[in-house]
Length: 139
Image (tube, rainbow, N blue to C red; front, top):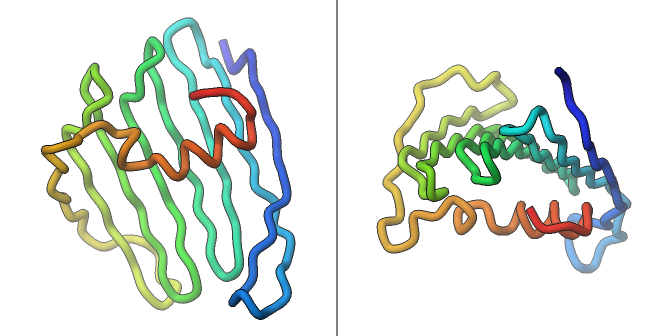
C-alpha cells in the first residue's frame, strides 16, 4: 500500500538566543500523508535556537487517535504520548524525559488529563497551528 496523497512543505523561521541577538534561520518542515482510506499521518519537524521537536499525529477516519511528540534542547530531552477516544478526547497522557543528553529510557509518568477540556487539539494547538501554517491546509 504505502503512502499516497502526500503534501510536504517547509519554510524558514528565524530564531535567536534573545531579542537583542542576531536571528538565525531554521527550517521548519511539515507533511500530511494518507496511508490508506482509513489512516493518515501528519508530521511536523521544528527546530530553533538550541531546541527542536518532532510531532506525529495519527488519524483514523479523519479523527486524531494518537499523538507522539519528541524533542528537547541543550541537556534535556522528552517524549509525550496522547491516546485519544473516537471524539479526539485524551484518555491517556504519558511522558518521560532525560537530562544531560542521555537517552530517554526512564519510567513513563502518567499525566492527569484536563477534565474541563480533554480534546487533544487543545493539548497540541501550538503545533497544529504551526503545521497548518506551513502546509496551508487545515488538519
